[in-house]
Amino acid sequence: RVLGLDAVGLERDDAVGNGQIGHVMAGVRFRGAELLAVFDLQNETRASGAPYVVLDDPAFVAHHYNHRGVALYLQRDYARALAVFDEALALAPDSASLLNNRATTLLAQGEPSLAAAEAMRAVELRPAVPLYRYQLGRALMQGAALEDAAACFSEALRLAPRYGLARRELGWSLLLRGDIEGAERELVRAVRDEPTVPEVSLYLGLFYLARGDVRRAREVTQRAVVRAPDDAGLLALAELAGTSSSAGAVDPAVRAELVARVESLRRNIAAVRKGR
Image 1 (cartoon, rainbow, N blue to C red):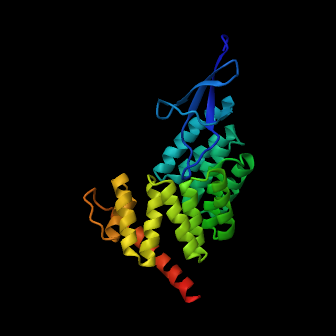
Image 2: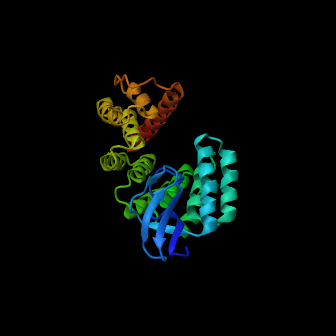
Image 3: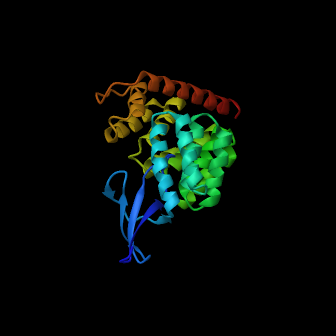
């Protein structure tokens, strides 16, 4: 710093994704000016030139706690993850990314109302970040506030038009509200926008299975498995759709979960058709 070089903690300012923010970023700049280099400390790589927010020192330290919390979340140790996120938030109470991660964990615990409160605060702090709108929408949808959830996903897509996960959730919210045609339109576009994201193709395949269109379910699954041959959800979907695959064994728990979701969707679709 005496020479004018400064190392600072960073956070992406255009985050998208499926919930958690776990990467610890750092940058080097000269005399407080433009960043000279950015590093992803989690993956030990140079990072891209995306827009970043500079963190103060307490917030940067908080992100190290956050990294631990994300690891616990991925191990499904949600109670300990929440405790670690609380430690991080004590250092950086206005960190939208930490609030977002806490909301993700509360959702995993089946607490949509608490999750929505955390996600709403994250949106208030950083309204231009698509991920936080997406996260709020997920919490609202889990709490059955489908119209408000759809508005959140639409706003995330306004900020990031090719945000496939947000479009997938928009399609799902339309399906749960009885708009089958609208759901198909959004789910198809989500796959077109992000064909390499397994979770996006999975939802479209489930939709076609529930609607009884096995041929299209197979087509979606075959394309998706080529791109992600080890994805547990896609392997289970391939078996349900009658698509042979030698990529790996199907997890019985994942298969059972997908069967339950397809049956629930079938009842939902049948109720919509009956009401027409």
